[in-house]
Length: 98
Image 1 (cartoon, rainbow, N blue to C red):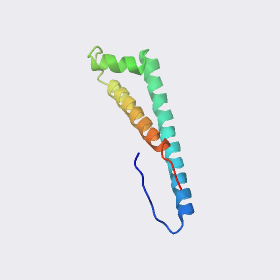
Image 2 (cartoon, rainbow, N blue to C red):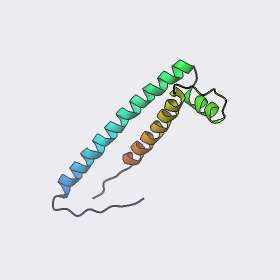
Image 3 (spheres, rainbow, N blue to C red):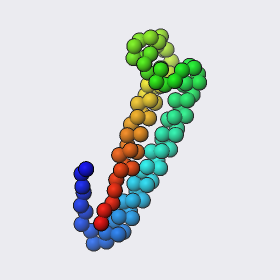
Image 4 (cartoon, rainbow, N blue to C red):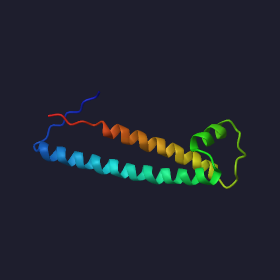
């Protein structure tokens, strides 16, 4: 695990600031995850298949590509969810030591 050392005249204030910033960023990412999951659920309901099944079938060219770009949006939303999850997971493991 990488370690970062910051030298500061007011370490407690800086620690509190960084913790609050991380907390706000995680909350923002979680909001994005919720909105993305809701969008994915809309696609799943409309097309009566899970995102996992859709991606498998889409990647295997088993689906007729729609001209209205909805399939591209569905793929994009699934990628967005993965990216947001990755970011949240990276921030959750940040640990402060004395």
